[in-house]
Image (cartoon, rainbow, N blue to C red; front, side):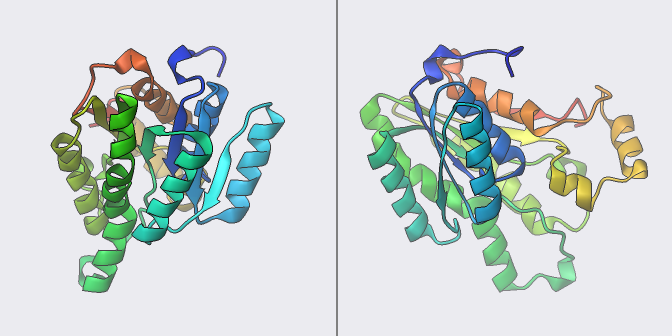
Length: 250
């Protein structure tokens, strides 16, 4: 990470990341920790999250893990308040948590719809509701939401996920007064271990490289570095924007 930018404004800043135990979220947690931020994250995967905390500690940095199911809004908001008490006012919120399980239209029930919306959209709204008063009192803050290129590329069997990720863009443009900057990142196909294990094949990789302008696979660190910039004062007058990081695919 030393060959990339360092942001003095992030040192000592309290940062909260949802879904920080693995994949893109884990990379975000690592990158903010390396900047000297006070980082806390939630996840339901205790083993992966504990391993991440140990990895960060071995590098001479720190991060705090809180186990929480973000579908439980009351419990989630309680964790956000707890982190603010322990580390100080949260002035960077990263709404990363999501899950892109495939599903066919014919199989979607109202219960499935509600659960997928809770995982992919609802938690972000109520996290914003929870941290906004503290950010306002602190004189401002930065919130980063996550959309997905899947609804642009019309990825099959992801209709509920795509609905949530499209709605994220609208939510990003509908909030953000009181010097609270609210932006979205739209990742392309990011090579997390989950994506590699479940869906990457020689054929799908060839199709991806054909679609992208930049002929390299995009990795979690590429997303994390964009989040760093949005969290730092360097982007102080950037708000209500969507940044696509997909190698020029869409």
